[in-house]
Length: 482
Ligand code: ATP
Ligand code: MN
Image: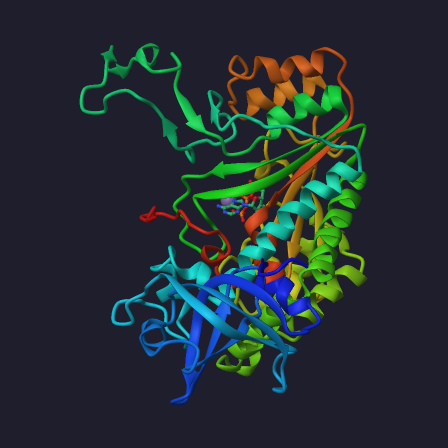
């Protein structure tokens, strides 16, 4: 190794310490010490761990030590020695410390103590510097990578579907409009906005899903997937909804609903296993963070399993598969339904499953991930394949403990007539989707796909309970800060 090699904290901590010279750059997490020696912990984001730096006042001048505070950025040259302390394998004896960026202790909002997640949301520009958020965002990266690796290894083609779309069939009222018209002086013809004057000559919105375009890809490339941002102007201020979130949507030609479920189950297990294999330190940290957080909860509110245990459990067990009708039977005869504890009482076929019902099935009844299929056509989208019974469609939702719905998917209606009739019944504009209908006219085939809400998967893997804490800069109703 060359003299003074600049390496990351992660790499340094993996080295066998042998009095070699190293240089490290990072941010101070904590400083403590005596008159003669200061102990600095430094982190550079490469790992959850910090490097302990020993600064002796004989070598490092007092003024520098004094300026070092939590949050300041430093460059340190020193000698890496074996540690006698039990907490770390090695420590860095500073020879030279250069302060790259001061952080005034009177103003810097993060201190080496526990801050609430709500407080940190207001400091989203700095929360990356905390253990919790650095772990979450390294896991978010690992999951992104795992998603691409999973599909790439299977021969899927990643396609980039448009973010600005002219079709609003899917989004009915939940879309963000995109325009460069002057809203103070909109062109009006016959009392209506004249979109021929708008940028694209038509009314456009931000996409709510890349599925319809992904289907076009699948009917030629065979197996495709999208992975992109999705926008929903739904006014649901919950811990599981964002106005801007990322969605992964595979679409597979010749696959029926069963094969679609198999793919989804394999995919989720793969992503979780990838994190267990590659992010051990971060997961261990989040596991104990969650255990700590749950200590303050009432006994019945605590989870039965720890984070790592839960992840392992999901990988090792088959997801429970049942039909909507079976789910309804279970719910109708369940205690909370009979005792009217549910807000929405299940009467029978046709009721939409609310999150209270989903939670009952996943957390109380089966205690494992569930795949519910064959929903009534009335609660699902127009493009889902109609079953022989005339009442249900080949849809499937995957429900996870703690999260609720994580995936929604279906086999698609490939029959032009059936699709076309269903669109008319549901008053979906066929003219607008002429291109979608043409795939059923020219070389149609059985095909299926699903959408995974990326942030919901991250919530499950990290144990974070609010979706705002797994995306760097959350967008929710009344909030687009940063
Ligand atoms: P929900 O019933 O939870 O609102 P949905 O039925 O509207 O979900 P889909 O339209 O099927 O969801 O979208 C596919 C997936 O995208 C969902 O399974 C979920 O994981 C995720 N998802 C949907 N809406 C949001 C949102 N507002 N924020 C984050 N993820 C979302
Ligand atoms: Mn929704």
